Image 1 (tube, rainbow, N blue to C red):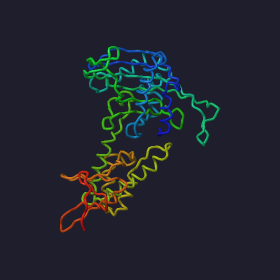
Image 2: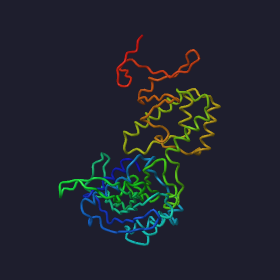
Image 3: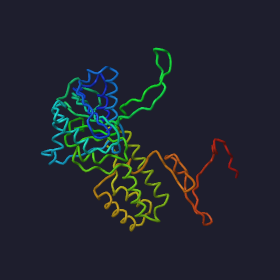
Image 4: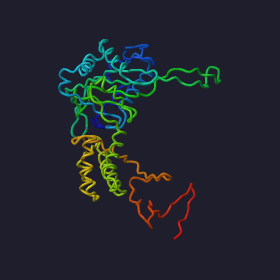
Length: 377
């Protein structure tokens, strides 16, 4: 799903726009015991609670595609006869009304999920009568034949608040407020099926993880019976290690700067088109960039071999997981220099009288601890 499609579903999660048939919950304690469950119509909740539930479900569709929002693909054989896929299809087709299916999914999550403390499993079903759109993006009065039925699941930590003083309006005074259990923002969740090209795609699920460095592989295996992708942070660290090991002494400031600037510019262009798929970069694109920097053929071959070993020759990586487009930092054991990514051209490295330096061009507006200083000729 691209950002535009995700945003279209998120807009559904408002009190006056959804057709949510029910909300189901399963409260689990730190011993993995079910404390309570509920099955209620969304409209049976008070208005304040409706908004809070919808806000939680919205958070399960928030983040950066390819980083916090990950497409989990099902193989054709899983779609035909896979137990995990069959369970999800049953939950979708029955709109979460069959207790056995809901209990089976909760059981899979509880048995597999490694999460400390109490948590709440929330589920909802919605039926979206997808309006037809012309090429100019205007909605048509003609309703399409597509009805997108989907389930959305959010797993939220339930945390104990700290004792505090609170204002009580009845007697116009502050009194002690006892600790209480509150539902926090979702840690993980998923939507099934996905809304690709504004239509149902039962071959994939959209998985959400709040922490891009911990995607809870055990959850993905239990719920989807699929191999978990490498976490975003691990992808960046592994890519950096591949560059360092393959290029060795040929990995200069200019090489890193060229790769970073090229990917940053491509990401900026990609971000302008909300209907575009998340930008990915493969081995060939990186080799082309390295070649433009004059990296020797032997080192390019070493990079290709190392890339294939770590990721696979045909695997492309989300570009946002390879570089941080809004960050350009130089670090030594004693000094950290942060530069606007658009002005990395102000920095260069040089050896003067046998000593290595990082040079920053500074014409005016130089401050030290907030004090404007003058650099003498």
